[in-house]
Length: 164
Ligand SMILES: [Fe+2]
Ligand SMILES: [Fe+2]
Image (cartoon, rainbow, N blue to C red; front, side, top):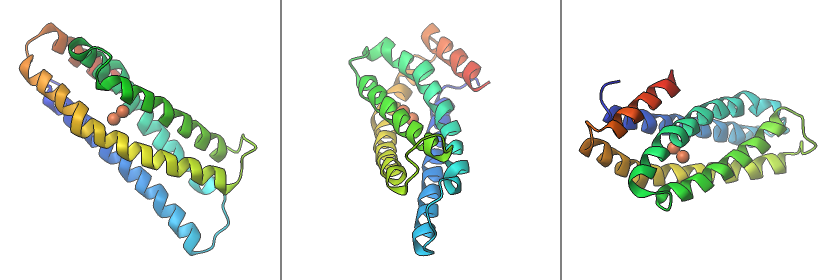
């Protein structure tokens, strides 16, 4: 990739796909209630594991490319620190959901599953909005203003290596 701004578009597009996956899971939950189907974690397995795959790559891109770049111009006391805390919380919730859909945990009931799902859904919506509205525009501005710098070249290389 020779341009830097498409990298931000790439990230925003991943956000869109993550939100679509969440909506799909929520639709599944509504259908389950409407049709009075008893909770079965297997119903959600494919979607949760798919969301996990999407989030894994996205988190890696942010933590290994976007945040280190931000650290060069804001330091870690900037917006990156609160989003990193949210990443940890997102990850913990996802781990709980994965344990349930894999059936390897004692919490096989729908209450535990839907509590974690609702918390993850709310947090991801807020997190993504903050990144889209606050964090990414800062990164985009920096990239545009430092297009020929070594820092930006290194960032592009890391980004390309991560997406493979
Ligand atoms: Fe993030
Ligand atoms: Fe993100």
